[in-house]
Image (tube, rainbow, N blue to C red; front, top):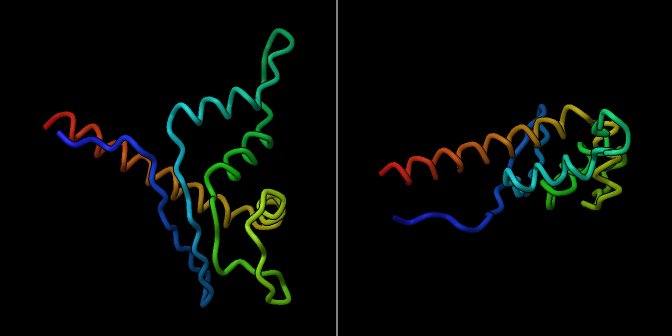
Length: 120
């Protein structure tokens, strides 16, 4: 039985009208997702609460490895940096949410494939 033991990048293509952007993503493993949640949670006090904004930014930074076709209003390419990922998210939330949703969907497909391989 052949099982995947390494993470693999995927390319997510998002089209809006005539424009297209490609995002290289590295879907999170369940353990990585938990660690990000843990890091975003203030454990002081009686009821620890996660900082959802901090969690979202951590997910964006960890999942989106690179992008092509992302430009500012003047048509200049925006480099894929941690700071720029936050800026793009803050002003284009729906776009980044779509990329993250697709990365999560890809992770679910990989997990289902792994389960199917274990059954066979």
